[in-house]
Length: 185
Ligand code: 5GP
Image (cartoon, rainbow, N blue to C red):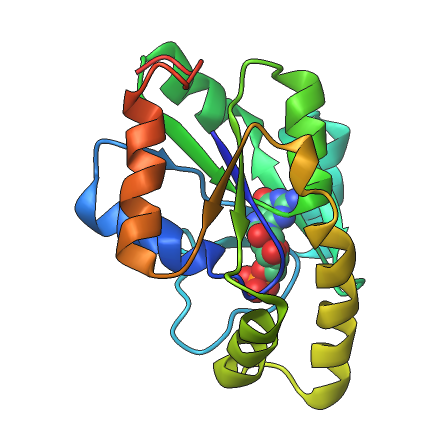
């Protein structure tokens, strides 16, 4: 299953809730060329790599998808772990941006595409400001991206509105369980 949605909608928080409450669902660890934020652990939140290491993974077709996100850094999904977990029959969740979601949809048409939407545009702006991890210029840039990302909702199989994290998390897990999911469980 692919979980995508606009910046600051809470994809990471919902994924963290799934990780905490549903360890039976495997969550992909992405590679990124951005620097770790305080508290982020290499190999847990991301695999932090250099530009050269990222290039090598792309050249070896080691990434299922990858994209430049917010014109700032490259992010990608290592292919082998996804294939291994699916082959073992374990449900797999990718929390990625819209460009990556489209690539996964093209390469793995069976993946269930799930869009996480904010309750409103105002709430999305509030969440981005409240996160406090970006300065004003970066925030404006991310909001511009979010506007475009929100318009892509109808490319997805299902929408979950992230009004509260616990409910969004349980809705997502229910999708894995229900017949809506074409991913093996
Ligand atoms: P952040 O830098 O705040 O952790 O993440 C920025 C954006 O990168 C988020 O929208 C997140 O969904 C996206 N992202 C994280 N991992 C991946 C990945 O493996 N592939 C793609 N395409 N986007 C990713």
